[in-house]
Image (cartoon, rainbow, N blue to C red):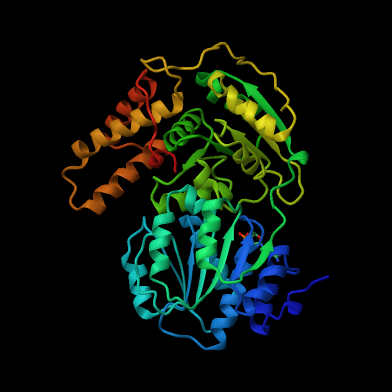
Length: 459
Ligand code: AMP
């Protein structure tokens, strides 16, 4: 059996890993750590949950510590989401607790002054989301984390821009769950003779997850969700929606019915997202409603139930989503809601699984057998139409409501905080009451225009 000490890891880090509760290395760690320690480029096919943070973190810590602490940014880790950035930074801090190195994390969405101050004082290892431009000429080790997600989220240009700022000579460790052609192009330009390291996938094998699908009309999905939460005595659950707007709406409706729920997605302030996650982990919130991208990288253990409030567009996403339940070999349950308009998506998923998903009987059987269409008769996705309309209304309302608030940043924050209030049923102030009324009106209005929801409406 491979041990951490047989991988060539120095004593101070070994002790820290043991203290952190790591006993044996995971597959990706076994493969990537020796190569990383030797200064080799690494191409890791690994998703969140495989232990990849330690796989690149240990080589960074050990190699930098050999030269002592410095003043410049010597290792840069680029990762797509703020949650991942925070988790990575926390982990590095724990693995490196016996070393004199400093770490920092930087991302958008919070007041930047403390982050900038910290950078001025000097850091060895920086974890960042793409988009910030810094002096990166001293970087010796570069990690690109979740490269395929960066591509999905439209960050690839930012990533390329950051790469241009890095010195030519450096060690690169590249991690991606999948390696589509666009990613391989990046690999070819960025990596030199990389050691390939593939992790066993982490998701619980699909076979051990109890899967069910409920055929249900769109308007009955929340009632059905409430009924199942009750019937199955669901302790906590992660619910996936298609749009950010959908996530807010489901959370709001659940709260109204007395089920503590919080939404988590890219429109929320970082503080609000962290707070929702904390409450969920602490059991104060029973249901976390998330979009795919926001849910990625969330480190939640003991999740017995995953609900697909909407079916995903890409069948593989279904597997990723349901793999969030039943971690560590424990069986979990994944229940999916499918309205008439989503039937083609269900067929694609079943084709991928090579078997049908059992139908679950319930009190809200499908009665609408017609997909929504726009004025020109084209099939549309009702959730996209609704999200688009709500976003439009929000944009229209925002300047009216916040013109008196000074400063752009402050205005944005007020808008976001307001959304959080609306979604989480905080005691409303007079402004919120007005906004909620209008948002509700939009939610229930019928819109027949064709809508391609902008990417910003999903993440
Ligand atoms: P990651 O893929 O880096 O996000 O890691 C997923 C989870 O596994 C995190 O909670 C890590 O702290 C944990 N983990 C990583 N490596 C090990 C290990 N060798 N032994 C036990 N837990 C680990």
